[in-house]
Each structure stands twice: as structure tokens, then as C-alpha cells.
Length: 201
Image (cartoon, rainbow, N blue to C red; front, side, top):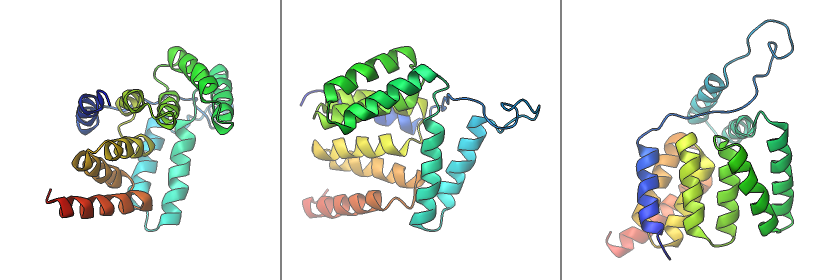
């Protein structure tokens, strides 16, 4: 299948290098309301949320924080992009993946620094079993936001599905550094450890 191995190596290097995140989105809060008081910087808000996520003491609290992070990521700052994302999600939910890809191709062209456009397109490619294109889009997501736990989970799933257990385990370990209470990642890492031990890896 293709060039998954070479792509995955490039992606692993990209996110382990700790490339700086680029966050797009609208400035909200009291300044946006015209009250003259600056809202918290979007990057600072994300940094605070990720610190909270790492310290979360239980799965419920972590899930609540992760949802707030996703909400921050979803802010495109463009009504056009927001509408295209809405149409894309609707098409995905209706399993019209070709239609979703048409919208997503337009999104990543119009807003190449909007990580969620790349992330949703990676998800659609994954659903179509097009792992090479999915990994390429995951690469773009992680260059924009190296802490994107959804993209990391997708990368790990592809690596596991294509027989790269050790690389998948490494990605799950990185994911759990960011989101320690993600039970699905804990479970998958445990399964991989057992499989690799059985294979003498």
C-alpha cells in the first residue's frame, strides 16, 4: 500500500520536532464586543487548556477540557469556511464522501492554515481506506498543531492497520503525553505492547 511507510516517517519527524502551532480563529470576548478590554489571546487560551488537559484527574474532566479545545480549533474566522465545514460534516454524516471531499478540497485551498479542514479531509480519506492521502493530510494538521490529539489518534490507527506496530505505539505514547486520560489510546497502547511482546519486538 503504497508509500505509507515513507510518509509516516516524515510525519513522525514533523511532530516530534515540536513545530510551533499556528492557530487561526476570531478574537472574541469583551474587545470583540467593543468594550475596549482585550480578550485572552487564542494561543494562550489553547496553551492553558492543554495544561489543564494534562493535569485532569479523571476521564470526565479530561473529556470536558478536550471538547473546549476542539471548540477553539473549530474557529476558522471565516463565515465562508464555517459554512463549507458545515456542508462537509453533513455530507460525511450522510456518507456522501465524494461530496464531502469536494467541499474540503475548497476549504484547504481557501484556508491552508486552518487545521480542522485538513483534519476532516484526513478523516474522509481514512473512511475511504486511502491511507496515504489521509497520512499526508495528518502531516499538514500536525505541522499546524503538533498537539492535535485527533490527528495523532488517526496516525496511530493507520500505522497499526498497516503493520507498523512499533511506530503506532510511539504515536500513542506521544498522544498520552498530551491527553493522559484518553482511555481509547491507553487501551490501544496496551494491546500493542502485548502484541509486540508476543512477537518478541
